[in-house]
Length: 114
Length: 114
DNA sequence: TCTTCATTTGAACATCTGTTCATATATTAA
DNA sequence: TTAATATATGAACAGATGTTCAAATGAAGA
Image 1: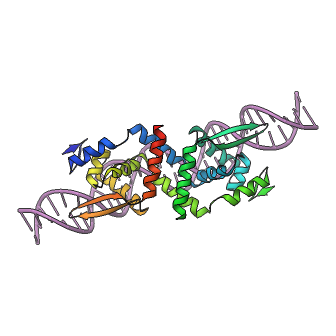
Image 2: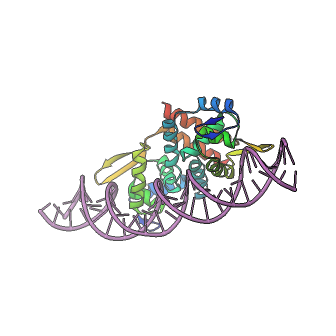
Image 3: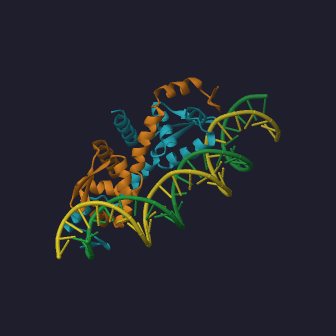
């Protein structure tokens, strides 16, 4: 039997799984979160902010990267609402803004350590 | 104060966070898992296998992609020990091989739905 | 106002990633 | 053995991604 032009072997199983599958938009949104955490530099930033809020250049020092590189990455995390900002004069403090992401990270931390 | 050549503002905070930060290898391994789930095509494969085991061409039908594209993605998931295989004659059945990944996915599913 | 400094931004670049296409492997049935 | 079929593989390509560098904001202090 064919589903969207590709030959499949067990149509019943395929249709059943298609029923359980989340909507494509949901899959995309899930993938977006995972993608945000999939780059070691970006993940390190989030891990650093797990301890406490930090300003951009302190994050840069923690991650041994330029302010510019960190700022570019923070923009991605900001867009996804994973981090939020707080301004104090010239300095901008970043912190985690998503409890689910914290849970995801703690779970994967537990994973690599066991 | 300088840490690895980058000016930082609050040395105490930076050093404290550096203490809490996981080892770089651990960060890399965490990122690898997230990267595996960061591509929508690959995530859809894993989601499909969450329901039950499937053969390659049924996964291709579910995902509306060629057998070849699916096979390439399955190799990545196999390398990371996220999925395992079972051969039955000509047909090879794939299934999830990592409970932590299942937990990660369920958590992010819950996230996008609430 | 002018200068300093933390942060942001945009363009350029090299690298990485996912898909396609053609081909190879491996198992079954004839 | 030969043909058919499920899966795997390698090279090639286009598109995405992360970093760098130079330049632009924008807030604070002189």
